[in-house]
Amino acid sequence: MKTEELIRQLLINIGEDPNRNSLQKTPQRVAEFWDHVTRGYKVDIDALMQESVCDDDFSQMIVVKDIDYYSLCEHHLVPFFGKAHVAYIPDGKMIGLSKIPRIVDAYARRLQIQERLTNQIADTIQNVLKPKGVAVVIEARHLCMHMRGVEKTNSVVTTSTMLGIFRELDRTRKEFLDLIQFSRI
Image (cartoon, rainbow, N blue to C red; front, side, top):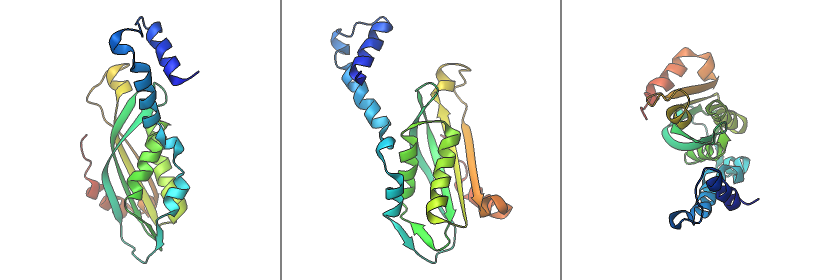
């Protein structure tokens, strides 16, 4: 069954008339929305990474912070959104800076849980670049917590993954955390 047909049936199931003037194009709009918000499934992340990996002897921390992202909770199919902060310390290989937000987006634009999203970003950078360490912190507002269930509208969920030197050395982890200074969403 096509997405438009599913949405048309959903409208009927909730008691709406899909033939009502302002709802006639809703199934098509919703189908286009779902194509857009799940486009991460179409991204070849390995190819994305490989196209800008370069050899370099830079060995200091590289941080890209405040990366806006939007995702869908796989449990309720409602949005969660926020900011991702990503750092790595190269060990002979670097990647173009624009690839880091693209990695975040590629994984976020899939049905997700925040914990997995955090790990996927860190693991991808670790596996491709083999850096001295990778750190990822993600902050999010989950509409499933805001609109239903506990209905706590001011809650922010924070997850982190620290690999390599970020996990092993307190001072390296602290430097990263000081640099990102947890932006409020």
